[in-house]
Structures are given as C-alpha cells and as structure tokens.
Amino acid sequence: LTAAAPQQPTTTTTNYAQELREKVAKEAIRLLRRPPKLSAPGLLGTRLEHLSTCTDDPEALKLLARALTHVAFAELPDEVLQAMRVGELVALPKKRDEVRPLLIGLAMRRLALRALVRVKRDELRTAAGKHQYGVGREGGASLLVKSLEVQAELRPGAVFLKVDLRSAFQRLSRTKAFEAMAQAEPAVAEVLRRWYTGSCKHLWHNGHGLFEEVESTTGFDQGCPLAGVAFAIGQKGAL
Image (cartoon, rainbow, N blue to C red; front, side, top):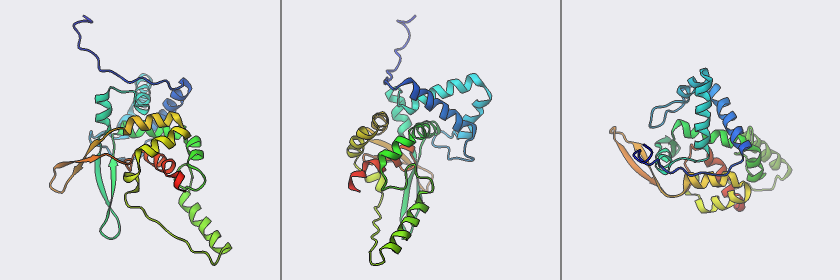
C-alpha cells in the first residue's frame, strides 16, 4: 500500500526551539479567541472569525494551533508555501491622486505570522533601535510628535526635515533586510527568508471585475505582519 500510494510532498523542516513553537501556538490561540471583527478575508474568503469557531472544540483548536505553527515557520510543502504567498492587492487612495498598495494575505498566514511577531516583539523592538517609532512602540506616532515638540522648544533655531519615501516597503532591498535580520534575530530571519525568497505574483481586482497579475520581486508586502519589522530593521543602518 505504501508503494502504491502517491508520494507525499516534501516539507521543509526547521530546528526552532520547542519553547518558541509552544509560545507561538499559545499566542495564536489567544488571537483566535478575540479575532478582529470583519477582517479582510483574502482570496479564499476565510475570515479570522471563521477560524475562531474552532475555539469551541478543544481537539480542533489543538490541530489548528499546530497547523498555524507550521505556517508561522514556513514549514510547508513548497507548492503550499508559494500558494500562500499570493495575496489580493488593493489600492488605498492618498493625496495628490496617488495610491498606497496594500496586500490582503490569507487569513491563516496573517494570523500565524502575527503570533510569531508578537512572541518576538521585545527582541524585535530592541533590534529595530531607538530611532524608530513603528515597531513595538505603543502610541509610536504620538511619541514621535511629542519628541519633535520638545526638540523644537529646546532648539528653536533648528530646522526639521521630513523625507517621505514612495512605496518604501515595496522598494526595500530584501537582501539587506535578510542580512540585518540575521544579525538581529536569526529565528525571524529564516522565516523572513522563506516567505520572501524569489518572485511572487499577486492578484489585483480591476474595475472590470477581472483579476490581473502583479509580480513582486523586491521589498515586502504592506499588510504582512513581517513587513514592518523587516523595514525597520532593514533600514536601521541608514539611521
């Protein structure tokens, strides 16, 4: 029977500590118990509220947490991993007739990677450094404004420069981010490398009701839980 059965797809195995795996699984369960309402469903139509119904069944919840742990560490057959990399692109309007590209990934991917980032939030915040206010800084935008107000009062003759990078997440060098993350947090670096090595074709739903392919070869998907930490740590050297 074994010889007659189709060969199982190859799954990449990793050597993450069991303690880290258990923490990610527990954090995923915690997130499932209080899912955001009406979260974007992604291409498969699954919302986090759908997955949260498994919390009513201990055995189903245990199996789902195990599956989410494999997703978090990209321990998936390559065909599955590449499929889960694909997301739906939406364009959010900005000023001056510009748009901000946002990727809506699959619910399981978003949930699993968010659990990993939350487990590693202290290490990632430290790695990102004190000159950024976006990663692991509660109320970061308000803190930045207050800091600038204080600096303006202490240095009334100083000039403040604002640099706004267009599509910053999508243009950041993946190689630079991989290298910086490997030095800062090796466990997350390996996950980042697995999810973002090679090109990926996302789908954009145009105004005519058709999907168009948009190839992604650089940077990180805005909307992915890994994108913020990858950007903050990847461009830390420039700060």
